[in-house]
Image (cartoon, rainbow, N blue to C red; front, side, top):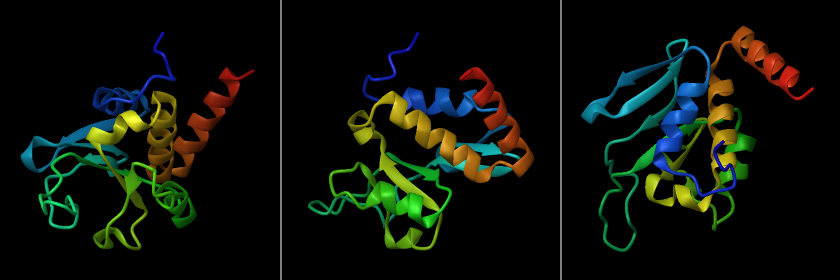
Length: 142
């Protein structure tokens, strides 16, 4: 059994995303994985872009991961705390997603990452797939 309280790792992103139902993986630019449900991306690994960079050196972050969120309120809950490893950039204003650097994943637990991955999947899955998954999950809690 995996210790859910341990710091999250990049391998956990892949494992948790693939554990969700109906997931396919496409290769984006630079062979970066794009996790999809029903042809809709819910997690992807970005190439370095001018909107996400180290403010001290100006160097573009090469390890940004994008997670969809269900609403702007969900996004704000993850990015408002300055201590949170989640962030956004002006490029993502109005876009239902949050960013995190792979190098900062260890600041959250594997359990917290699992919740973000599941919420990303739920934000993009069809209503039927989402309700089926939630019903099966509720049945496991009995």
